[in-house]
Length: 212
Image 1: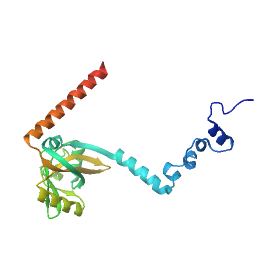
Image 2: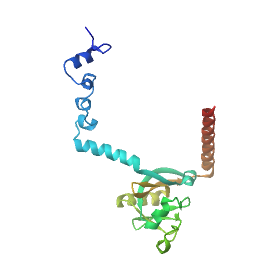
Image 3: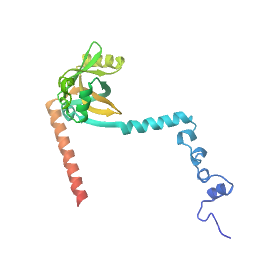
Image 4: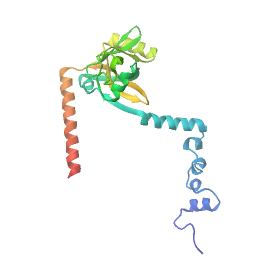
């Protein structure tokens, strides 16, 4: 007689022999074993489970870095970060897509519960003609009023600064990461420079080790 379950754990073999799906016999939830999405099998409504999974995947796939303000983390301690939208013209968006942006000396300011970014340089779009705007114009940032109000109080009371840290596409929209920052002393900057130098040396050593 041929043993169809040779090498199979006893409890699993019994489950299969009794007509259970293999996945169930192996301890998987019935829904998962039958090919249902994990969220559905674990009791979530089908629509909710699929929306959660879809939103998580899309968020990771669609976030594309445009520019990073390395100078900010050298000059400041970043206590908190926030995401904001930014009001741009069509030609400015096209120029940003080409990487024609510099915001290493930029800062954010709150006026009448509205937030603006200063000294962000977006080069004129080469085909923009009369539609190009002033490269250094003040641009409005988009955040919830309650967040702006809270930041205004913190900045005013604690003497902190709002500094743009990075710029990225989230889907088709341009977003900016803003840091609530404290200025570094000279010795803090020296420590940061030393840490960055040590990190570069470690990365260089690891690359050389991988080549060997």
